[in-house]
Length: 154
Length: 319
Image (tube, rainbow over all chains, first blue to last red; front, side):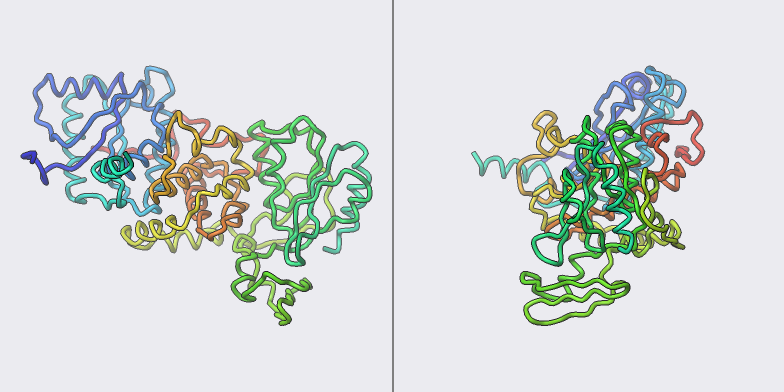
């Protein structure tokens, strides 16, 4: 059994290739202390993120999702994060009606040089998720159940 | 509708120029109307316009692009037509819109709940304020207000918002935006766990027939729908509540800022899942953040297809 069993929750982070991923890297290079709950998925731009990725992640058993991109006006593709901002804001407002706490999802902007800020964001978000505790699960929606189903089908 | 005569006259005049005019006619029993494709003069006499004409005929328009099509629309249907025009899915020159002022349509589910067995309907009479249904030998007199669709009780656009021909007089309404969203606000106030449980239970009934998708005038991907695509593989073939629920969220999200709330998805649902709630919630937030309503102005751009450098109402979190 992993030693962190019960101490960690499943948090997925979608990070933009140009800013936030670099920012997280800067934080790593700077040896800033960070919680280990976050699993990072690198995307080309925050505009690449379909809000449904986040819904799918949450419905598949994640306890929290963090999206981070370049600051508005700093997008590598000029306007990707402007579209992202509108979509993600709508998602944040939509989640409560599904019965998912809106605090389980946050979006923010971190630039490549902001290692310190990344540390802050990820620490605070992880704390926020730990306060909420594990998300309600849809039976059969987590990895173990799916594996069982797949084994049964084979 | 007392203006049926005017409407028929307008259609009769326009028909020689058109390939087809889509309206409604009597269905397989007196309680149901069915879409009616008018191609010849004698078809016009079969046209029926009353509270049973629930179908949103705008659903047919994208597939008929390139033809000269006439369409009979209620207020809510006309908004779907406007939205289709706005997204360049149909051509303005190819559509002739016959609008009228609508006094509301019935919700067949509500009638079924009151009357019980509707398998054998003998007759259905609609007067100004009552619906009289005789089924299996018994007669039921129902006040029209009790069986009207929910959307009609708080309708803000009873008249066609865009039309080439308008039959009869305009209907007046006093409903406000807030009136239409009381149910959403009420549902929102429930605790999160309760809402989560509610959807798990509701979505479990879904049989994945996709009637909601096919009835939706703005679900235009059809053959390329993500529900059936394996690349990307958004949904598995499993009949699991997770996949059904996910599909409804996909549907709601693909309609964000576009849905005109005609309610066809929920009407078409054979197991009565309240899926309109998702779309209404999205529209409520769109209105709040972008002050935008879909299907009013053919020249507007849906809010999620554009942006402002400085958003008026979006405040990001300061960490």
